[in-house]
Length: 359
Ligand code: BMA
Image (cartoon, rainbow, N blue to C red):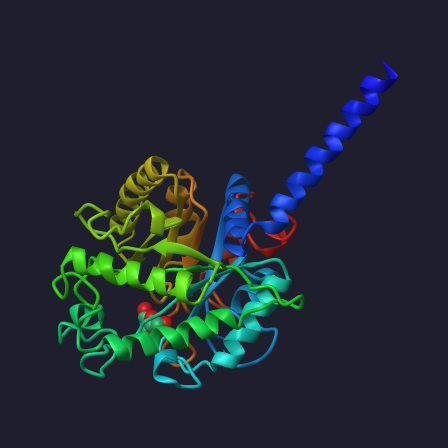
């Protein structure tokens, strides 16, 4: 009897030890994927783009956030943007210093939050911005194309930034990375009409292989992030091997709440189904009602629909200080401030405090 108990304890100890060794050895990305799945059971994370660097009527202050000013807490997830880093600039296309972005990524990780990264890369064929679709750029940046060297140099700049985000112990900080997003619209050089679906897939896979093999980046949770529409959302899907998360970008741009509600419900339905079939995490990777025209939008438009679906997070787009059209979350004094407080008080809406202890 005595011996059996000792043997049993020994087996339990060995099992626990090997489990913790496995966790310690797992890559930062694998650990983040596991964590996202745990958090998903608790609810939907609130995300906000560029949250701690500027807001509706302020910029560059440290420790400030429109979400925190209204709710008392930071969003669970923060989005950051790398556009213009490929040109060797010190600041992003939204004028945020990349050093500051690095510091905020480290701070968000330290406080137990999650990070998502987007990249509105300039058009390598024309030198204009991401929204210039001309020049056959996708074909030209791929191996054999005349812009392949230039593009490798751009990837090098992005990879080096992603290799520079380390915690105090020197470990790479895991982030959700969703390159070449909204490819189903025609507005980006990597989008519909400007390359074939096959060329798009090659672009995504080339980026994936370069980052994971050449630069050994093991801290990226890869997001495939189409916009919405009637087409199959998997037209440009590079394959299960290259994707951890699928999320769409969908906005309430024209104040037509019914259109947004119906669209969101339909899109979430098919997203969640697709993610279940492909064993991927589901998210709304960009959303919001532009200019916040409706004071009850969060509890009357967004939440009644979003709460019906199993998704990891909803990332609300930025509150630009210099362009008030770009306002997607309330700031102190906004008409929807009280409604937003009600919304975040919902048990299944997660702020930083709700996730920081879910490891
Ligand atoms: C877009 C707009 C732009 C911005 C870009 C990258 O959706 O908000 O003003 O420059 O994202 O953040």
